[in-house]
Amino acid sequence: MRYLLPMRISLTILAVASLVASAHAGAWGRGDDRFWVQPQPPVFAQESLRDMRAQQHDEADLRREAAFTSSVCETRISASINWGRSQNWSPARGSLVDACDDALSALEAVCRGGLKAQVQAKIKNFQCFGDGSGPSLSGGTLRYGAGGGNGYDRTRAYLERVLR
Image (cartoon, rainbow, N blue to C red; front, side):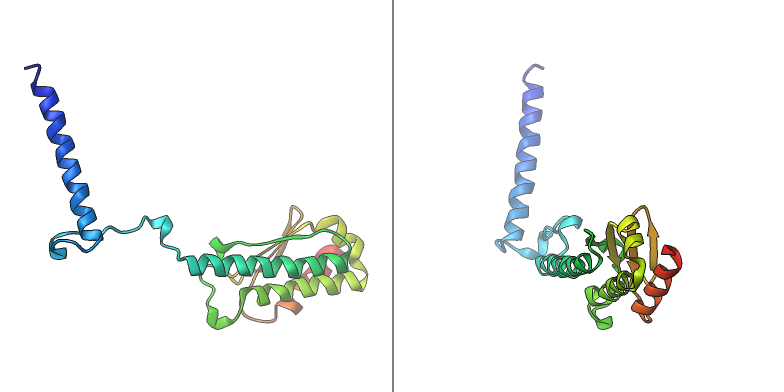
């Protein structure tokens, strides 16, 4: 009886080791692949390295655009892209950064148009996403959901109404 438990554990370890070995055989193409399930990457790892690099590049481009806007408005405005709200953005529509730059251009125009002090007091962050929701301002963050239409005109009209 006292040898039964260690034997059961040994058999369990042997079975697990066998499954791991067979999975590796299938993953590396050894053995008969018809019988082995190819291991799949975890869900969080499905985003390609190319996509991640493109997102990093877009983030850097948006930060550069926001730095110019910051210099025009004479205040520090940080910028980021909310990728979770940009999943439906299609590259066929063009660059998401270019679409969001329309909103930053509107912010620059508002600063040049005499509302610089209000921008300095009320806008500290800019968040870009591609869900088509347009501009909104709350808690010091100007959010712009790029979509169809003229983002510059829409954002400028919104800011002039909200900042006055």
